[in-house]
View 1 (cartoon, helix red, strand yellow):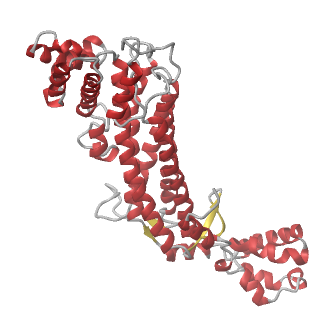
View 2 (view 1 turned 90 degrees about the vertical axis):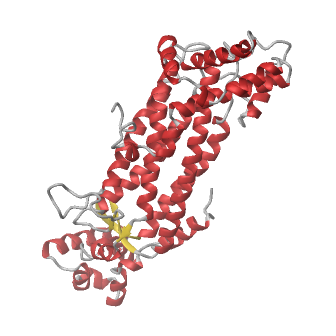
View 3 (view 1 turned 90 degrees about the horizontal axis):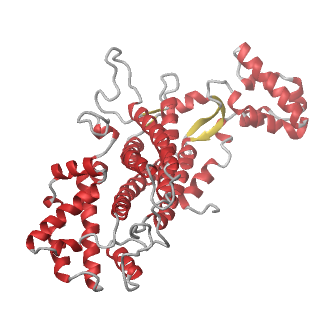
Length: 454
């Protein structure tokens, strides 16, 4: 095992069968062949190469015709796999008629084929990402609706802050994933672009001014956009999609971190989906570890580190580079496989998440009223002044902890509070967490309705 994504044991945890197939040698080589077949086809259509040659090239360009052992040997010798593929096509087509195979790869260069194949692999990757994002947002909408009014405590600096609802927490996550879907749609128009320019990108080998015509026909054939100009050493497209994957897995990691914290024994507000022995310990039978969340955060951190390498790969020399391009070969497959695995783990986590609303309610009572101290302060502020009310409630909260008394009891006994004119019933209302969730429910509804500004 050289990578966890290659491991028989780990590969379906740190990757998925679907994304592994996209980034396999077989699929990459299939896209090399698709490029060569499509190029030959459109060049025959516009009279650049003989139709007979194009037909013979198309007949060979199926991955089952490739000798992968020979391709490995040629790649180790040459340094790139494209020429090895081209040589096999040439050899086969020439065996049908001498010289016919020499029309293969006409006007193209190695990077044209490689970059276009990579774009096609990224297109497949984004299709998988999009489908999983849709599943995630669908399940989040269900959670938001179900728990729109489920009371829980918001936390600041890992301390209890004020009441909110679990639906509000999930709606924030939903809104973030909806923004990621917008980003994905925007990225596609910039990413899904053909690379075909020849040695330096000038299409000098396609004579009689037919280079742009050939380029446009090839882009149409592959369902890609026509490039404004060659982008052999302009790698913003690849860096941008890597940055998107870093953002996406970062969101998943934030969610997984919250789940890990909420699963702590002393908190117990949610649990990962249960099935026998999931997250169990080899020595402590009582444990139920947040294993999916652990994988999400580990893989998400790795994606962010690997994505940084794509920004280094942007620093390329002149019109064809010496080294930075190959960084993409190393990290891009890993970024894509890990990203899809992170999304799938996240989707499964959201789908089967166990929400313990009784524990959420119980945790709201831990501070014996301290969690609504802001509500009390703001209730007293019009009568006593905000800063005075703040200092008064601050001191009463300290006494509540020290004397193990409910905040309400201390409020009712305090002279300054009585002077404010607030009745016991009004103080009880201020000390009720359910009355201080702000616009939690309204904001959940706004996210669900997609009617928020922007």
